[in-house]
Image (cartoon, rainbow, N blue to C red):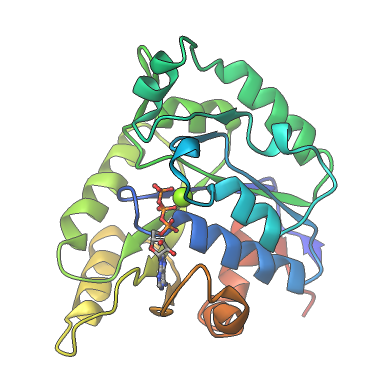
Length: 243
Ligand SMILES: Nc1ncnc2c1ncn2[C@@H]1O[C@H](COP(=O)(O)OP(=O)(O)OP(=O)(O)O)[C@@H](O)[C@H]1O
Ligand SMILES: [Mg+2]
């Protein structure tokens, strides 16, 4: 493996909440590790910690274990199942982005590359006047977009791409996902083709639907990994395999 240039990580965003950022980040982390890179994960802000669902950071740490303290991987774990700004206000706190950047830098110094799972989509407010896009700017990382493969995805994905390009945020490509079982007559290949043609973005892969995820991870993991274009992924995080 040799270095192909600067980016040593990706900010994994999505068209919206529930599109599959956590599953995608887990798959990408295990793919990178399988290729010999010590990939780290981070979930800077998560909400709904108190609702009894396994928090994203706990799941990510279980699939990509690391010796670093959890506070560094998940500096903001907010109780309320609400948008970050609202969940933070409910706890009378303000998200301090500098704390996130410091945790990221500490993690980056301990790993070959980092995968940062975003929160919701790109236009989610984190603190007054500060959006996810502003956090991406501060972290100086390129973005990977997780988009649903099915109907309705073209509009959401093009909006996301337009927003990022308008802010001069580099996009490495799109990872399509099927968080629900596609209907038999699904048009998803037309959807994928249309999005790629319209945006000119690189296809990083298409994750199939895996029944029962995340509980079925051990069974589904290899099948999911097989759908990642590993060359595209390695180049996205700044590496290339030796020819
Ligand atoms: N390929 C897939 N096959 C089956 N289920 C999936 C797949 N991808 C995601 N899911 C399921 O869909 C739900 C949403 O996925 P996930 O939690 O990864 O989304 P997210 O974008 O991280 O959401 P959030 O914005 O809440 O962080 C989860 O229950 C997850 O297990
Ligand atoms: Mg998530």
